[in-house]
Length: 196
View 1 (cartoon, rainbow, N blue to C red):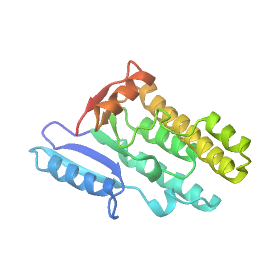
View 2 (spheres, rainbow, N blue to C red):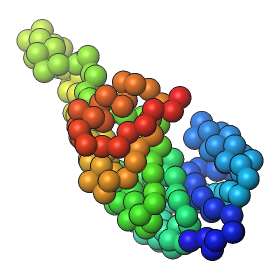
View 3 (spheres, rainbow, N blue to C red):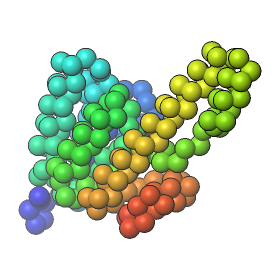
């Protein structure tokens, strides 16, 4: 925490030096905050080479990287986590574990959610899959089943991410009213703000 009279230190956890929407958004946010009097911004860059890897060694190194970020977060006055799930891992277990570590590192953490996928919006329904099977279109049915299962898994994982944030009473920022409604359906007491 800052001493009285010293600048407020705000950390932002995100992708930084890569070509992606989150990194661009983070740069704009960091520059806007840094322009405020008495505010110092610390960028806490995710190492995407590690966090987006699937090898056992790289996954362990990614977890250590997250632990390093957590240590840096502890003494900040506030922390914003820019959360697009693919930045934090490939598998939902890795993503959730890393998110929870970051959420627990500093009680003055808030999360910007860039994609809220807590409701299954798939156009593939089990009856569609059965219809393709009855037509003996097995490959089509198997492809549809694979897509259906993936959508269900992604929806459940997204729900777990939102629940992890809400259960810790961390404020959330979303970009659309639809996202805010989805979060409130899942966690009615969640602290959700809309910021386009």
